[in-house]
Amino acid sequence: MLEEIDAVNWGDLPGPRDLYEPDRVATGLRALATTKGLVQAAGAGSLLAGGGLVHNHSGAVFPAAVTAAPILLAIVRDGHPEAGATALGLLDDALTFAVCDRRTRVATAYAEAVPLCCALADHLRRHAGLLAASGAEGRRLLADAAHHWRFDVQEAVAEGDGAAAFGVLAGRFPGGTQPAELHRAGHVTPLAVQVAPHYPLSSHSPDACLRMDGARLDEVSPPAVLFPGRCGSGSADR
Image 1 (tube, helix red, strand yellow):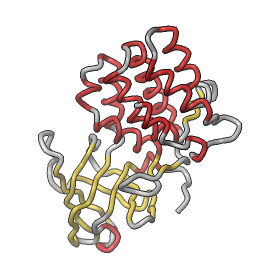
Image 2 (cartoon, one colour):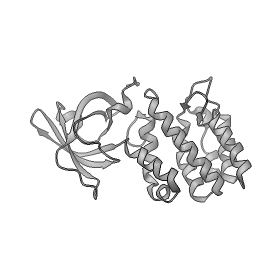
Image 3 (cartoon, rainbow, N blue to C red):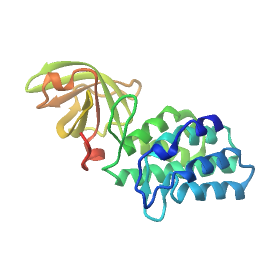
């Protein structure tokens, strides 16, 4: 874990100058990864919650929280129990604050300007087994992450006045017709696409088909990714 922490230049990550203190991140994560008890875990958590990954007093979350999420989850898995509990608390704060932050975006391997909440949710889903075994807080984090669904388009066909897309759904689609944010080739189209299941969704398979009313086939053909429109309803750089 220490190599992963030191491999990141935390000062290069964006954040408001009056709140984000990148020097706290590496120090806090190293301390949390090596903690041996409650007092050390609390000290590390204070660094990370006071301007490192989040700023509890103002309810702010920084892109560093997304970069640090795999490290925090590794601490949950391999660290001291008190460190794991602190890491879960930080992840919970980050996702909670990110839900209210609809302006900040982060680059990921699958899209260039993903809402913070959706990027965090993807990390949490990738460690579903770990979180499910981490008590009530871990299970609550998984449940909260499920609201931030993601749909990766694998194939699209014209359908009426819109398109139907076949692909893989992560998280839980709430049902009915939902506003979505469409990402494709570096472009973000917010709240312009209404999507709904074309066929009933299965709880046993991530494969899904969504109908996109009013969408052009060239807009939604692969590689395209959809996120909930409500997560990105603030402004974003495009």
